[in-house]
Image 1 (cartoon, rainbow over the protein chains, first blue to last red):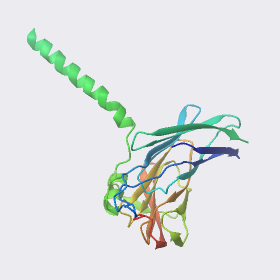
Image 2: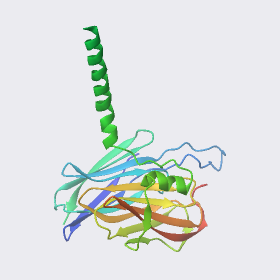
Image 3: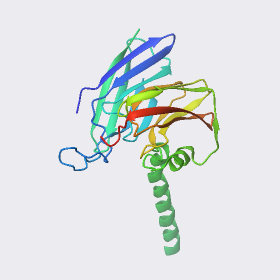
Image 4: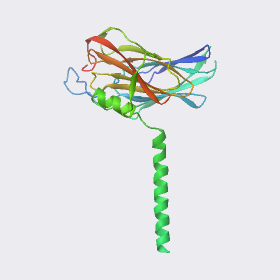
Length: 104
Length: 148
């Protein structure tokens, strides 16, 4: 469960962060078509992004976000060469954090 | 003497209980993420507050989605002081997809990909300056993305 990708770019005083996560996002209601058994829930519940030690976005998710989630958002400020730090946490307690430098 | 001691202990207990519950108050998880109906989910996120329709919220979704498992969605809003943006799908088994909480320097913009069980309205619920506003748009889904 790794391989998150984070891109951040600042234009006109706004930083856009694009995140691609690697996760099955199982809702816990889907049935395996071969075994006909319910696949246990396994989805990301929390995604946060920090800039300069301050949270710029926090989010709570259900299993309704697509598999291998994509998320993009913007915040005012952010300087080139500084970093944003993105963390996700799932319902099994697994977590991944990645820092990315903001591009001009 | 023993009475005073008891009172003190009581006070200390209450005090520690307050301290113990405080971090939870600040780091609240969005309620309604397990709600099974749209009405329950909406009520949970908005705390039962009035929700007004707004033209200052734009939802960009395809009119027809061939694959309900991956429906791209983009929400933009020009409302002032946006505190949060929630995405709901009226007819999904779990209607609340996610709630994004913005900081003071946040911008009213979220782009992601969601699952849709079938044709339904997609709703964006925006908290702006303490009040709730919403906009919706219908997406026709050819193949649902919840049963797998």
